[in-house]
Amino acid sequence: MQLKGSCSCQAVRFQVESAQPYPFNLCYCSICRKTAGSGGYAINLGARADTFEVQGREHLRIYQAVIDGETSSVQRHFCGQCGSAVWIDDDRWPDLVHPFASAIDTPLPKPPERSHMMLNSKAPWVELRAEPGDVCFEEYPDESLAEWHERHGLTS
Ligand SMILES: [Zn+2]
Image 1 (cartoon, helix red, strand yellow):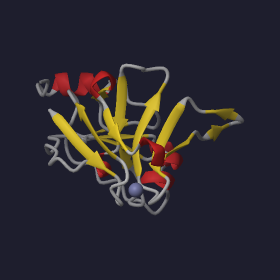
Image 2: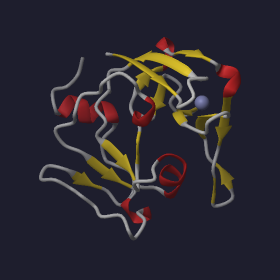
Image 3: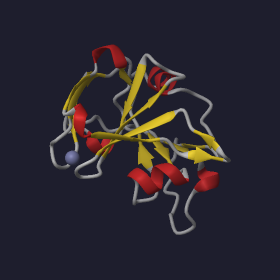
Image 4: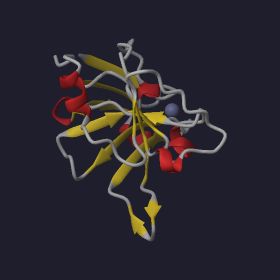
């Protein structure tokens, strides 16, 4: 499906084709929750880099976290005017772009089940609300965004 998204102040707008639009993957890592998830986690979607169109690129800033002394390959794009987290890029997966679900204006489909990842970094005050069928991971999940969509018959 086509996704349209924007930052809060609308200086940055984008559209992209996504085959992984279900917001099922909750990441509790300290970087996600500090930069994009005051509820304790952030959610990224999977979308096709070759269809990605951006307006207002000049307003973008990029944050690459330093983890154990090494700069992460994950490029966290945010609006320099309003601070909204908008998407993640990673050189390891150049065909993909990962918009934050919070930046999407198109109504997203509700996921039938969720994944909870990086729970070893979860803030102590955050209640893990796993429903029956949800899967939980101390670190990275054992399936990709695409594999999750395939397992649930939600490929487009
Ligand atoms: Zn903005």
